[in-house]
Image (cartoon, rainbow, N blue to C red; front, side):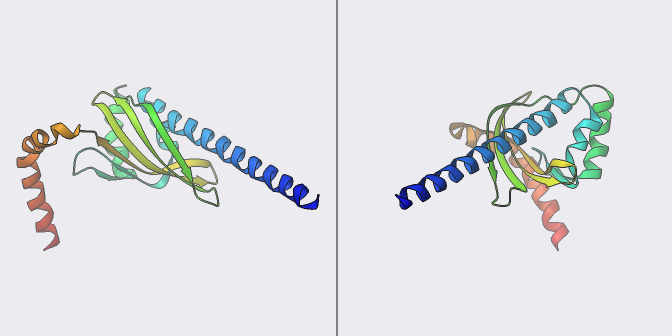
Length: 168
């Protein structure tokens, strides 16, 4: 009887833990949606207030590895003109570390570039959950990869030379 009692208690704690993680993942999911919505509404302050002070945004171009202040400078004209970008999640997976103060996610997005993949890291700060690192990629169907490589080969060759010259 005691064993059954302990198993019941253990199972109850397990269910509470799983429910708590699901609730937290739902909250994080909503914050990511709010972040994307702020861009679609060209709300500069709302968008950047959902990013950490040391955030990084990596865009689809090989040269786009933006530290926060550079990214703000780049984005400001788009937001001021009322036309930033519009990303809507089609699918998203959210994961949490054991301490539940760090989350990472991957998502498929409906964008003006068709389906894109985003992945990021969220950090629990004193001001709540914020985007710390984000990577945006254009998805390419496997049968079309060779054609896309041909299209970008010249630009990539030039950029590779530039990168190699920096390391020498």
